[in-house]
Length: 512
Ligand SMILES: *[C@@H]1O[C@H](CO)[C@@H](O)[C@H](O)[C@H]1NC(C)=O
Ligand SMILES: *[C@@H]1O[C@H](CO)[C@@H](O)[C@H](O)[C@H]1NC(C)=O
Ligand SMILES: *[C@@H]1O[C@H](CO)[C@@H](O)[C@H](O)[C@H]1NC(C)=O
Ligand SMILES: *[C@@H]1O[C@H](CO)[C@@H](O)[C@H](O)[C@H]1NC(C)=O
Ligand SMILES: *[C@@H]1O[C@H](CO)[C@@H](O)[C@H](O)[C@H]1NC(C)=O
Ligand SMILES: *[C@@H]1O[C@H](CO)[C@@H](O)[C@H](O)[C@H]1NC(C)=O
Ligand SMILES: CC(=O)N[C@H]1CO[C@H](CO)[C@@H](O)[C@@H]1O
Ligand SMILES: [Zn+2]
Image (cartoon, rainbow, N blue to C red; front, side):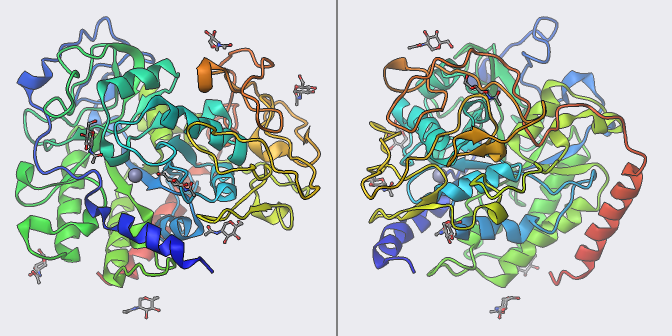
């Protein structure tokens, strides 16, 4: 189905197994020179870098979060790959886990971005063409193209991860200026059991960075000061060499314990050990930071062993039978950190809830059952993609992230998502919002992004970078958060119990 050209272009990228790898500590107390006065720096908008849980909570009152992220292009293959680890799981509240997809646009199938977002996952920025030390237009263009061609509200794209985890002090400054909420490119590279651990809970840059101080010039010792902008560190696993054996992304691709080949049993062992050190300590999050293409069973040419797939599922099964363990996206983690509540009150955290938008009209809205026959097929030679929002005349680039739609064959132009309708309720063919209640209406933020600092807020049919319709507000409630905070439903404990039983049944069928 795919032209041979794509395989030729993509497969070399697969050898980037070490994308974002580290091989030792990336900071030290001297290099960090970090100080922060926690009597001045207070939640929700300020948090000091600290191994201790936010809000002064004691670790036993804190959920153990497993942050699950995926990077790079969104394609059927990569979503299949994620689903084999998560589609059958539930969190303690009965919701299927959500993840963050740090999306780059080369080879991305835009309609699948819409689907993944409408299913409640976080879509975040990973530059348009996957470049380290990214120029601003690579970062901004990604927002603009995701908004225009996948219908993701600008206010929902709050996070960034640098390709190759290669960021600079200017990257952080630009992200804060463009009103991102967080970056998640820095590594926590020293085990939680070490007194000098850099496994900080997410923190704001009011007092500068405290991670990666040894390898990112111009950061740390109080720099850069970006009040209210968050760093969500990526927490490494450590094999039996401790600080000398860190594994950050796709640990299953690495050789454990300095061995000369992959050993899934050894990987599982150290992943469990690191998890337990977090769980029995200050419960800093643990992260599964994945490049899903490496574990794809459907992408031509990729070979992944069943043992590796079973090992990853075995790890999650094992973790999920322990009390208060949640698999979350980065935005869900951050929502809890900003307003931390003890585990007994987690039902009040809107970000952890799940609701399905009730739309059964046949409109192109990110709900696959509604979209039959309504997708545009954009047949570009490098990578043909599908979208609900009309084919651009040319492939989006950082110079031109929202090209004018191609209507040369007489097609009617599609209407792009406006600033006051949420994705599942927008009919891009009729140009009408089918939302009828306050839970699906919102006002998107206007952001100072785009060429020449124009504010792009969606709307229109492409080719324009201004809107003007939206005034900046923060009133957007993600549709999956359901806005209203409901009291604990009577059935919730039953749900939690069933969730655990389900997880245990899964555990018993695992071979490894
Ligand atoms: C792209 O999306 C369309 C529509 O959902 C789907 O039929 C197709 O298989 C996808 N292709 C890839 C490579 O993701
Ligand atoms: C990271 O960025 C630096 C400087 O901007 C550059 O020299 C280096 O090649 C980059 N590394 C990768 C892997 O992109
Ligand atoms: C793989 O790791 C396991 C657990 O550490 C160990 O018992 C086993 O000997 C290793 N296998 C090989 C081939 O090294
Ligand atoms: C891997 O698992 C799949 C699905 O369970 C099965 O069809 C396949 O034969 C297995 N491959 C090997 C090499 O065991
Ligand atoms: C959104 O804004 C447009 C133009 O300002 C207005 O016509 C429309 O009624 C609004 N839709 C909703 C759902 O508020
Ligand atoms: C974009 O919005 C920002 C604030 O949200 C404002 O400062 C800036 O002037 C606006 N730029 C344009 C070109 O409208
Ligand atoms: C499909 C696609 O977007 N291809 C682009 C990937 O990035 C390179 C530059 O890095 C472009 O030349 C391709 O057009
Ligand atoms: Zn990447």
